[in-house]
Image (tube, rainbow, N blue to C red; front, side, top):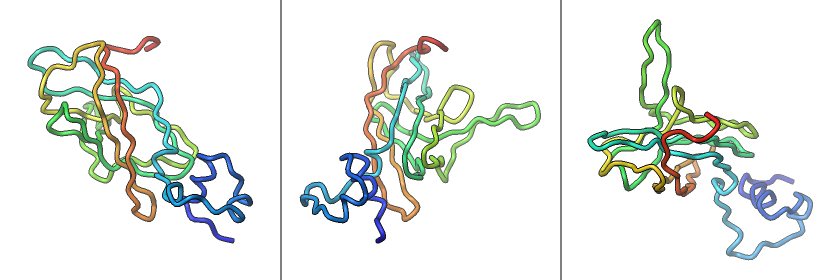
Length: 163
């Protein structure tokens, strides 16, 4: 018997075994499962800014039981939001957008961190004050192109404790 990714996710979210799914008939409201519901975002934070600063980063650890790609992000606090990488080229650190997004391999944790891959918030509409939160929506695509989202409220801080 073949199962679709959304059926496997339904089992993960509800705790059913795949054999139970073959016998169960989910209610219509449960039939469509958002793949991003299985994405875990841990330790999310955005760096606080000062007056006049037009850009900052958001960082977190992402994991998913199924392979997904983080394809874009949005926030009402920024005019432009991009998935960025930082890479050492020769003796120069370069930052650039990742137009094809960021792979989230199944079962692995991908860290978005300062000095590495991150979400870049640019053209900020106001300074981001420490102690506040900012809404951030992450958009994912699976191997078949199905899109899903994960909405977060990201705390703003200078640096999380333990860094």
